[in-house]
Length: 245
Image (cartoon, rainbow, N blue to C red):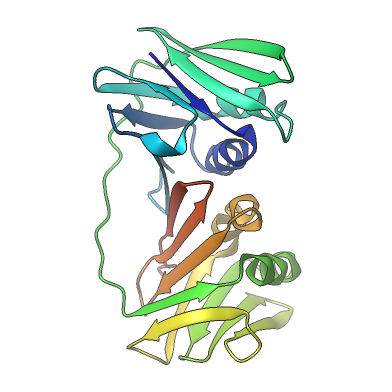
């Protein structure tokens, strides 16, 4: 059984991001979709990649399968992928075979599958505040804040989101505005929220933000920060738990 994706670029960014906080990922494949989940050991971050059958260029799956992969090894393979590479994943009971192909030039890597990656749970939450934000502006905002502090505070109203980096040196702030087009749409039922997150877990997701075609951000007081990225027919969900202090 095998699945082929039209571009290795997005998958490379997703796996690279996941490998920064988790050693392993669970892949569930069925006749209709490919789902990859990775969670960090302290349960602060959870990433879910969903690829429906129709968003692939070839989908040869005849039964439900669950695979456990080492993300560091998978990430090393995908870092060699070029922008216009296609990628095919095949698997046996013990191995994941990754093929990268560009203009007839094919490279094949065989990775051992793990016996188990543990359970990765699902999250179902109702969020009071939803924003559709510009991936470019959010990426640039995080780029300017990440070196300033270890904590990212997010505050918001219907018209804007305030991102604040906090450290012993002080505070830096980036404002995303609906008026300026940095926020494309919003549904805010609990304005005035303020929640803090560990900065590094936010910046782990930056590569995916950068290549997103559409980006949804959901947030609320004391709730995990939720990103939903859509690109090339794939959906990537990313949760970051709020700081306890």
